[in-house]
View 1: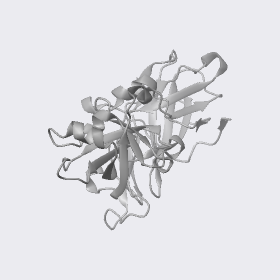
View 2: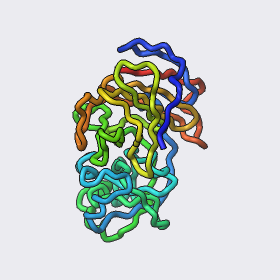
View 3: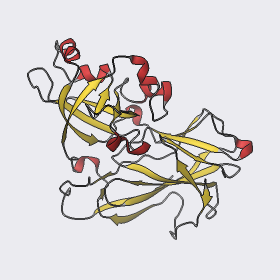
View 4: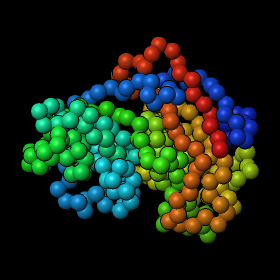
Length: 284
């Protein structure tokens, strides 16, 4: 159940960017690579499986990233839905058949098959192949790959978007949302909502077992959001000051006015340099 908790004691100016230091979170995505891991990858033989992913993106999943380069990920990567929307670069180890750069996929589903960490779209699977080897790769069915977390590179410089789910019921103060087009290499782990102009009385939202956040105590009027992103050891608050208008509608996607560009250290990996990184409180 949703509830309320106090506003954190931060003095913020609208439109300002307040700089602070967080160990483990870097403001530069290109400054450091994530750890490289090894696993096996297969592909969806039935395209309809792409439309019923556990993240809850539905038929929109195919259009979210690079023409349908999407993936189902193992529970350790899916993280009860916190891993939804994360991007991973993977390359096949057989260099005679596969391109060095491999392909990048976005997580839209949970993979419960313990034979592979990822099941990816056939489009993404074939994208790893050198020209002329695409069909041969499909015949193999399973490939050994190196993979790592990377920033999602969205076309048209999209901002982070908030989609109001069809299940929302404004008259009952029930609001369910989903974040789309999240860049950077972090995860959203906490979300609060308040009426625009309010500095207190924030209502926390809970994440279901997918990419949906919900509350049964949604404020009335136009709504603002704040959320914490983290991956590794620490977190960082973002404020989206004007997102949902007072006449928000179910099924509509709204621009947050900001984008997440941070990356973070991965547990068990070597640090991306020796010093804590500079990050920012961001508001629009």
